[in-house]
Image (cartoon, rainbow, N blue to C red; front, side, top):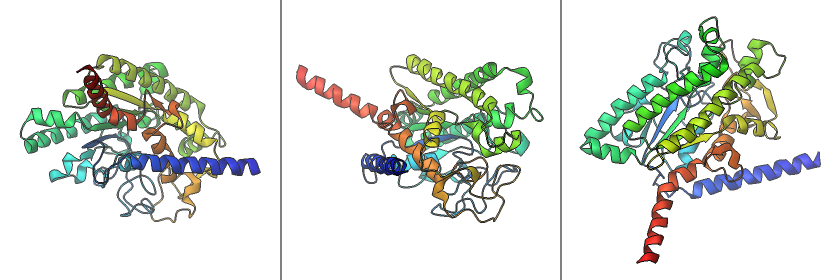
Length: 379
């Protein structure tokens, strides 16, 4: 018992050190990148689904109970993982959702993520309207045109956008709300898990290349978590509290292929673009072995058949002890620990490949300094 308490104290001290280290890299009022563009699903959605005709929305209490402005459409009690990463990057305000973005706001970035969305267009459509990755890209093209108008030309917009960060966290629903719900989608009868992962990767790759054509150069590609360990899947499959290994195995294939895609794209664009992979599943395994989360077998809020909080129900009071806020989505406490290592993986290099976000965004500065030093010694 004493050993467990000692390990827990050391773990907390390490996290506090990492948080401080993350924050000190942000100059007051000056973000490390001029803008941040976010593509994804409910793990990153900050309000894009609020006015859609869909069941995949969270613009009601108890969601947002710990967020500074309350209910926003985020599928958690407080900040999402990318919210926290944006703070580490030095942004004073959270990146606004596309649905609520206007004027000069677009120069800081836009969040296009949509709850229920996937890489495939049809994914999540049984919920109602969702904004697929393809449609998110179309929204970004409109944003790029507006930025070009503001800056005066396409070339100036391209130069500006090349310095920005592009965060892509999508694919979970292509399994949970497509491949593994054969009553709505035929994917599992058409493709083996290996074939399906490859289809997803090929489509994702095309979208990433489309982003590259309009200026994207720094990419963060988040892998899938342990999808079979979400409460909703465990309940649906009736596994008596055990993870659904069939789902975890399929998502692992996707993660392996995504990591391989990062290598492929880094080789293809070695001169001017950088891609990194964040191993969310590995981090989930590690966090699951700590004592920080006392409750992993229940959601903090009462949740229904869709896995979402039942409206206006009171959530648990000890939210920092919970992995899940509802039946699918993590708490802010879980998001925080994932965000720390995604941003600065010093304590755990295996979770970010081939580097972390901090080193990705600072790579150009480092290269410029190295070039300056080399020039100084050769003249």
